[in-house]
Image 1 (cartoon, one colour):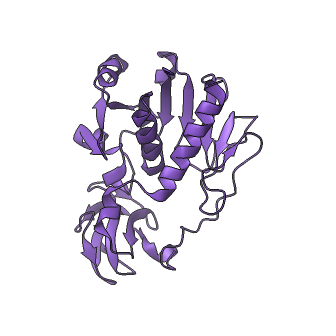
Image 2: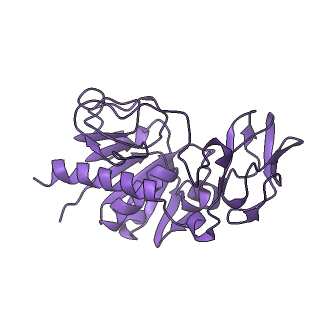
Length: 264
């Protein structure tokens, strides 16, 4: 059995889908995150462990660790440790076999070949064979999850994927600068025009009806236009608490990339 140690940069939705699959395949996974996570789909993001101490996604538990010394204890318990370390300083303390940049920043924020024997970048902003070894396609469509050994992923369109014909309408954006306060919870059914939260004193209203699939935690300082929530017009509450088809496809691509290189 391959005994690989894998470092994932980021603990948002895509990163968590990847971490979940790799953990289920019995790899030792460590995730790093910001001290103040900005994840929207928090019910399926291991970044929630930073705020709550621990979280569970489809049977896999993530725990917040405060130091690298606690990582091994989490691995022995078959848990995913999440460390506040956006600069990846921890990579100098562990012999990681694989580094996955899953921040989806649409640009390289400092992940390069040489960080580990295999370095993988998710989505646009990376070039396979140059700054990373392999790129995984994250754009919805025919090539979603494709493993790219040479070149780049498709460019960012800036338009959310279509669900029942809705794209930008699904996204809730802060109407003003200020501290964020949610008045609805993930999984709640909401109607078009209903207030979902506040940015300062300004109400943030849903543009369409559906279920609230994601929303920022209270207290986050937002700016006008910042993505702050997500409405799923399909209305299926279960979708709010399970890994998305997109995240599973991307995770499958990462697993294929790792095995294609490491399982020779």
